[in-house]
Image (cartoon, rainbow over all chains, first blue to last red; front, side, top):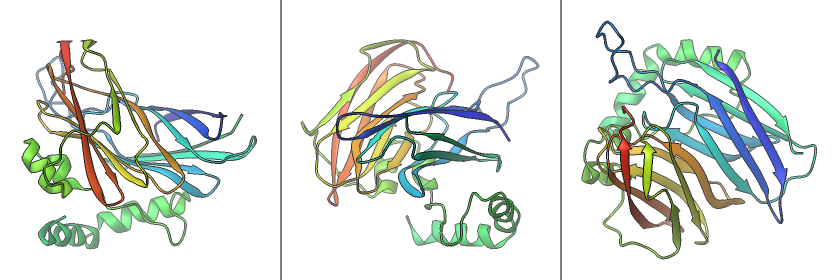
Length: 103
Length: 158
């Protein structure tokens, strides 16, 4: 099920800033292992960031997003203590849902 | 997205992967009733040239816009982690796309911004060699573009 996504959300002037660090190898399918065999592609294809239950950002990724994808986004509104959640799915059907509160 | 691609996707969804995967997702609560994943633009992600990518994204040729700020290093030591920040004050931004014109596939990521989300994205991308980073912003139905060259010293194996 992958490793936990780190989420930090804080109130700035007029908006909430969310920083997200997902843990995923983002393997592009073109690299070879030591024995010369192709390492199969395994990468996050879609991510959703929600504030409470409202989507504030949807991402579609290709293979060229860096390993352990990092995101910063900003949305209007948000109060301390409210919920931010991030869920992702990869091309192999692996997925992960993590939550944090706005600090 | 072309009708063919759509059909292909419908077929794929019908033939199984849907049931298994979506069933699992629903079971663990990732999908609440009434919500579905936005359709990923697979044709755009498979594009091997900028023209193909633009076509798949439905973008007509656009000029560089001063209303988009694209921050990326002039020189990246390590192409595996190139930080990119896009900022734009254009009204009603719906989508931000990041492309690299010399990667094996052009499109790196699409971001879909609902109302209330600021025209701001930071992420990190892989670059195989020195290339142009191209950003497309869709605002109020129109596409705007910004681009800058990033010199890559050690390619990011993408």
